[in-house]
Length: 310
Image (cartoon, rainbow, N blue to C red; front, side):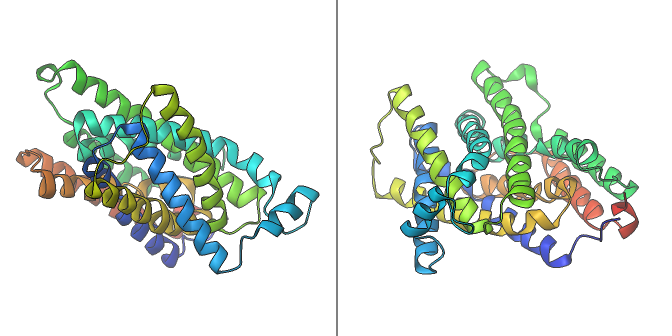
């Protein structure tokens, strides 16, 4: 039997989801190629985390050398090996998602990417033997109905590029779930490092992968203006550092299914920001869908301890 999800962990996850809801907005403001904005998110974010850890004396060059020699508490090659799959999964997630933002806009791209909730729920059931109670099932149904309303109902009326952006968004959800599950597994089962240390390592490794993609695509690393630089720094600070520090801290304390559902706050808030900042056209059914999605999150988040038993 597992205990009911701690309220503090739920609150931390909600705060993290709210912060990362701003990431698609910063990507739109950056006005650079999708792979370039993804690279700077991870490079700037990883650098910020690394400096923070250095100031706290939790990451030093000496400890890395000890890790190579097998030091018991050092950051070393064992952590790198366990972070390889999350690194690749997150790089794919960002590449697909940033293309979806370009093609269909920040709000819809974020909503589509959060189809990961279904993959997360199935993983929790199949791999972690989590019991999905009726409250969660009802909340999931509401969230799915709301997302369907928000995705759009006029498929035949949109152009081919828009449709491609929708598919990029859906595939983003698969890669996103793979990242969340693999990072959660490495953090909870295999590694003893803090969330900040693992997130820093993952960010720096991911930046390396994305740099290769930028070069392979023939893109440039140049930042066009100060506004773009500010957007990329905001993307790193709010999306990669503050938001994911909170999420990484909360994930090991929560079941996989609840993690996925709470992260649905991200698309709801991102949709609102898209409307407010970029004037996304909406109709009444769009807002009904948003309300239904948030209701689903509330219902599933309020599930009883009975639903957590295995």
